[in-house]
Length: 150
Image (tube, rainbow, N blue to C red):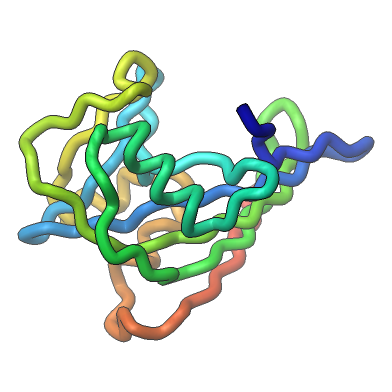
């Protein structure tokens, strides 16, 4: 098993992550965690793994199905504090998956994968993800910086 790209440093941590923005019939695929947090499905890139390989692996692990036609959609530089200071680079891919009411991947005990209406996108964490729902030019790569209040 490879190591996740989380680098511990004196002043904090560097994370390299991927997430998927999958929309079907005005619904968005999300991960819901036991603490109530809702975010996009995805996770950390592993050492010697490209971001596209990582998103394909993460979606398969979390949903049990293959991600089809992944395309890099946005990059978010995310700065936040959660016990440590984090500097995170998040690659977000668009793509398709087989449509099912529920998904049961390897991670189903730690998160629930489901669909929410796009009108509820403001429930996503981090808050910057709401900006993705406002993008009109989906074939263009978009870049955002998120600095959470400390």
